[in-house]
Amino acid sequence: MNAKRNKGCLRRAIEAFIGFVLVVALIVVGVPAAINAWVCGSTRGSFEQVSQAQAEAGTFNADAIVVLGAGINWDGSPSAILKDRLDTANSLYRAGVAPKIIMSGDNGTASYNEVKAMKQYAIAQGVPSQDIFCDHAGFSTYESMYRAKYVFGCERIVVATQTYHLYRALWSAKSLGMQAEGVPSDY
Image (cartoon, rainbow, N blue to C red; front, side, top):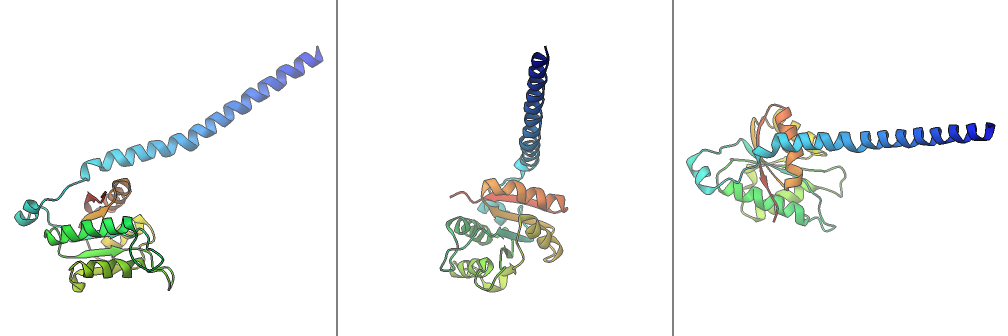
């Protein structure tokens, strides 16, 4: 009788443990998934493809185009993902979407300088140096958006980055009270 009761207790303990693990897994996976779904859903309508006609008509004027860093190669040149972002920003600049470009990226060490590589690439593509602002403290998306508003004084921005990143960037910008549009850099 005692052995039967011990087996029943052990079985209930195992079932309770499995239930606990499932609840923790649901919290660990479910809560972030729900938050991600909310962020994506609340910013999806902010993705724009800015046309030349809109820029010329003055219907899409921003204070600045913000380019978010995405790594540099060992030789100091922009990574392929970063080049896509820079090419998008350069096209928007040439279309007259904004008079300035903010290059925001990591410059955490003397040997790693995303912003310098970004600026050099844009200048080589024909963007005048005086129209490029450098944010050397863009260590995260939120910090880049915060600095665009509070350091560079932007109220309306266009963000050039890949689609997967636009959700977080636009949500951060809008949570800071900026008008923000995103242009996917998915080449």
